[in-house]
Length: 204
Ligand SMILES: Nc1ncnc2c1ncn2[C@@H]1O[C@H](COP(=O)(O)OP(=O)(O)OP(=O)(O)O)[C@@H](O)[C@H]1O
Image 1 (cartoon, rainbow, N blue to C red):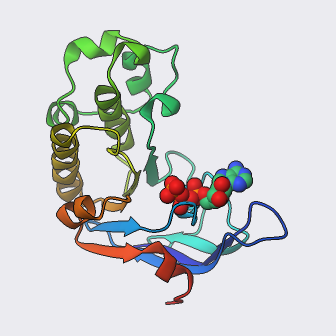
Image 2 (image 1 turned 90 degrees about the vertical axis):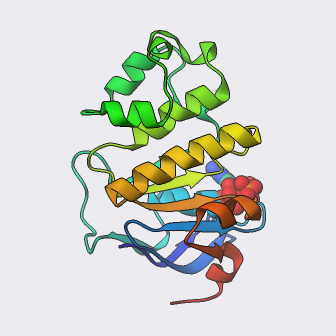
Image 3 (image 1 turned 180 degrees about the vertical axis):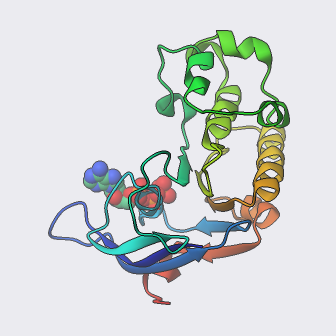
């Protein structure tokens, strides 16, 4: 279980963005999260994936608080794939970062072999996002946070990407936190849905 225990955060010392957030995500479940713009969902996602440290509280991953020496078990997939990938590298180099990326992931995500020889600006947003999703599936990944990952795509691409992702996470027993403003999308993909604003004022 991925557990946020009494997490509080502030970007400046005078104001709390949120206080005492308690939240738990089981392996194998998909939890949808929505909430007011600017309320701190992305910030919480960054704390859960170890990009930011909380001012108070802790993130406990399957009972462990320790530093993970290799790949962090919580992987964050960002809203804008072009910002998450080195623009100078060919996709083959980007994907080399992931050891043992198997053929199954490439095939399920519909990644074409010829895309590997291109640089990020030579792919569409949807094609690039497939690489970012593939990259999140390291063998050590236990949880994935998907922060508005398909918001800029047409309905068909959005459905294709989520269909592939759900199949992979269920097969690999990975827990997913899907953050989105599109409640209808969350209803289609999630096992349960939570309102971030209620989380902020509702200790577990
Ligand atoms: N590095 C930063 N320094 C200062 N303030 C920041 C920083 N990053 C984000 N913020 C502010 O913190 C607040 C929460 O931002 P965050 O991106 O976590 O919200 P969100 O709920 O994900 O919003 P949205 O739904 O619009 O994506 C916003 O008011 C934002 O301007």
